[in-house]
Image (cartoon, rainbow, N blue to C red):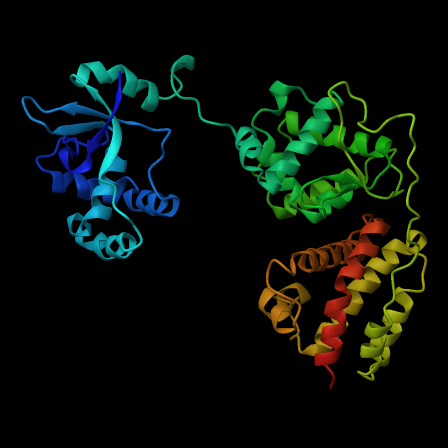
Length: 420
């Protein structure tokens, strides 16, 4: 079969398309497609991309004895093109939107199509496209993992990295991991879970571990086991993930040691990618929360002894030895600072330090303050957990050090604008 170029004005919508009941007119088909088959969204995409998908050729059937055709495959696309060419054809509630859209569109005169003799000759091909998998003969849609490999979506990409590592360590098989990427992604979006497992996602495109490999593998193995047995699922809400994270952190035989962040990349044979004969030097680990003189001076200018005293204590204690205490101390410091700045009682500091407020403080837009807001969330959750839970506490000293540094611009801005 040859692909030919046909004039759009000579192709008509199918009155007996399987998408809808038989109609008597083109107007009826257009109204149905606009109201039920997302034709406007398709038209927007066509305008944005500058044309229809070249990987999908239309199929048409010639009217008996006429040089006109009706569409067999591509009803929605043809409808979108016709309405972009002549918005007056659209139903009244869509007409205004199509008129605006058509102003950005340079109409196509022809489309690529294959001409079929009759409905029977095209029927089997339509079934292959629209009839589902059909045991393998039909079109197979991409799974979540396959979409991630193609699009590079950051959230799912990290979940995929974790599953790849777990599979390389024989914690989960290819069959067992199928359909699990959404659950892993959901858990990875929770800072308490990341802290419990011992991972750092600050690089955005690469997971790193901040626990020794032996501890990390034990905890990840536990999570994979729970994933396989459906002990954890996508139905877990935030409190349930929080409780699970506390249980994971309390797993027997796990040290509270943290290390400098290291990639978790692994080869298919289960060996780390790094050359085993080369032992790179581990960077020296920070021991204290970093003080910044400008921030300290801004706090002093408030004339508030409590805030200055809290800040002074925060950067004078060894983090590795006093992590739970410093976690609560940092929480108390931010609580006090935001209260002085104007936060009302009963409003937590996360809610008070909204994206708009951070922007007004000169710290940037939503994207620019992403790391700062994530640090605030960890300070809030880890501080509350350490204060109120009978046995659980935060011991992630490296994360606390990093969060404290992320918060410095905000602390300084609050101190400068909050003087009373």
